[in-house]
Image 1 (tube, rainbow, N blue to C red):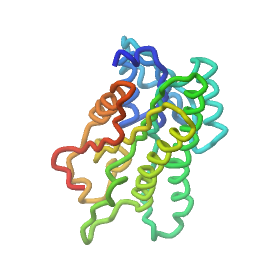
Image 2 (cartoon, one colour):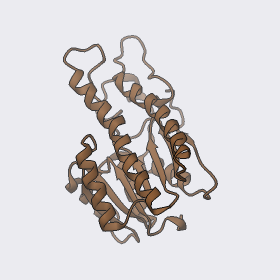
Image 3 (spheres, one colour):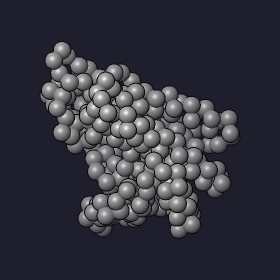
Length: 252
């Protein structure tokens, strides 16, 4: 990880769970990390976890569903820190509304805006900065096992909101399309798809009323962060394209 010491990382959805674990791991590795969130104070709260680390943590207010907010945040990063070397698209939400529930369209649209459109907005900003600086940056999209297979459900149990795996399947396709566009536009950035199974305290498991989900083993957020560190630590000519990481015994 020596090649990343002093480099600039941006992590969306940085306040809890996998996002917080990734922020902590990157700061400990010596990176200058910008944690993006709607509430800066929640990112600031992570300082106690990186006290004495050789890296640096910056809390940046940003609503990734707003193009203006993203532009403002990334402009601050460019002017203050000089650019971006690593983008981790981790922000995501889920609704407990099912697809066939009434009065759910607002929630479903917000999921699309956060889980997909926000990812695209952030990625465009990051790739533009990477190309301008002529660096081989890395974009990691934190996907899900549900981006590769639909959720398991048995009769009588409530399924996961169907828009969530729909967004994650779309993210799988989007990541590959981004990879192809990066080559088309003669950029050198790596685009990585990291798909965890169930994770402790993430949006899929926290407060779930799905009996099947609640019985399954979970990964720790730090284990997902370690997988990310592996993926970004390869030589320049090596791409870890897709990673699926699951807790032993999970049957999704």
